[in-house]
Length: 478
Image 1: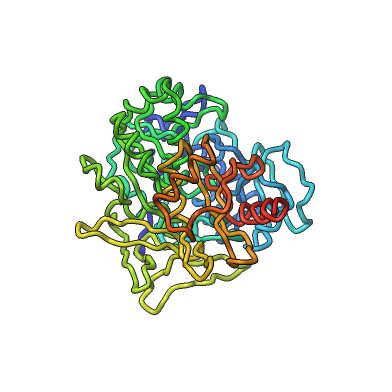
Image 2: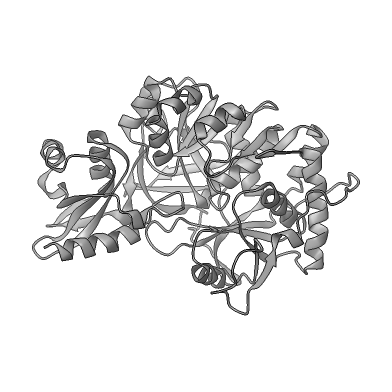
């Protein structure tokens, strides 16, 4: 698809003084954001930032960061949002990997760990939300223009830089909005970080509909934010939903929402049932960074059985399952490739399909059911072990928000499953119940409480990190 379109300029013309960003006590209209993006674009030019330049952004979510993103796309630059909580030297490694030499951050951010090749630019030098205004000139952005490099979660290894076109983000949002409706009264809470594709997608969905994106203080209770800011839509991963359902005061607020989009991995059946018992308007989904967020999602008024799936295909996407159970995807939302320095690695077959590491099946109604990840599978005593099968059983038997099973080296069996549980459980009782549900080779050699050092600040825990920790714990105690 080749088109020219500037989403923020169109939204400013269509929605004018309607609120686009709520950031604490600050409320910015579409027109204000459009003007601020134009003045920020002028400042970017002064810093020699233009078409094709990669610009990393290491910031907490703010109105300034959202305006900066729109300004970067306006000048043809490529935004590379990264986790501001990660160590600076790790950030430097990621930027070297994708060939990025400019970093926008807060003035308090230390330069320690950054190389001389990375130019550090303070946010307040280029973004001023009150800096002048511009005429309503027509601005357009090429759909095929590179717009972002987003790092995969790194749950199974080193993160990769996923490059997307401006058009792939727009098509993703259009398909999402036709399934989960938004209007000018809608308010979508930014409960996922902007360095995660699920957070970034909210900016596009809201701007297409004249809705507002709401940023709240990190310490604020989500239940209180929902009530105070009249939130209507919410994106959550499993751990976030679990913690909210443990808070009786938040459940009443959640039930007032119009839609709760669940993603970031399979959601436990027990948790879905609990959400339905409280009449929460949940939508289960399957998505990945390489497809600019959602691929499949359940709609409204679906059955509880359908909500145990990841839903049906959204428009502008294609999906199929190969003979080995692998999920293959393509379509208008597909990424351009993995960014490696100044080139793109394009892992597509001759027909344009991207072969994911996810395993799944389609039922007779076209709903996708996730089985697990092919690269998580390991062999124990000659038997194939899919960790997600064990994780689902443990989740159903415990009061847990997250369960991850990883392999540990074992002299007799080669590898054995080792389980980390984020929640309360009784080891003996759990072991007894698991013996009734799982074959012997799938029984965890040990179940451990969730380690503090693995909490992280991202959306997903790192399996690679937990695998290393499990191996150390198992070696120390055997």
